[in-house]
Length: 278
Image (cartoon, rainbow, N blue to C red; front, side):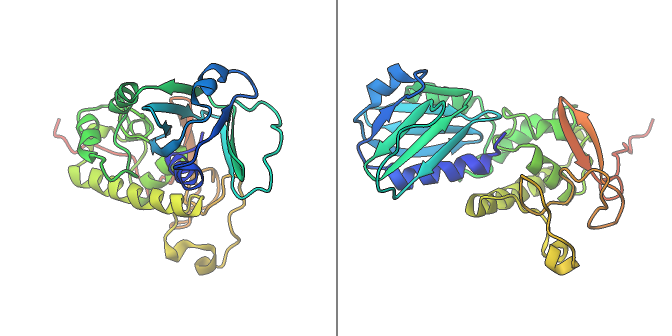
């Protein structure tokens, strides 16, 4: 599933290409046909993201809500000589004479009102990529929870936009075991997680890939081969099961948590042991 930086990057692309322009809105597949007919010929005002949710605002206080899910794609094609005929199962197409965007495979593509959008946002945790985010909202949930921090970071009602890659990597960078109970974290540790995510995810928006290793652990600095993976980017532990940790050399471990794989280094991220006196 795309992580939050992908949706913010997509929102920027949609705004750059279509904002202020009157669009042809269609649903070649047919599943969005009724709503597309209501939007056809309307001006697109802007697009924004909150976590893994995308909101496209049209004139008349109409908003298209998109959630890509596991297999969804939303490809933007600017500067074309002519808009081609749609290929495959295109749920929604946005088009102007010199550009178009095709949405495929999304788990949600619905027309919403501003009030409905506000309700959806209110149910989501703060997004590290948004200037208006309040990290204290997430901390209030985390500090009272017995659930593992690895699960809490992936709960979109606690924290919006973080997926499995950023979860694994920020916990490694902060030397926290993914199974450590959220309620055992100190406020300073949560602040460090939030600040790290804000920087890493913002870099992801700029580059379109997830890079989390520090300068001293890049391929160039270590004299090693670049990572080869369909997710791209240089990482410490994500999908590196059994490979040596770039910091200490111990093999990267893995296990499952709530249906998703965890990745960590047992030396750099030791298991949490309470110091409480029994």
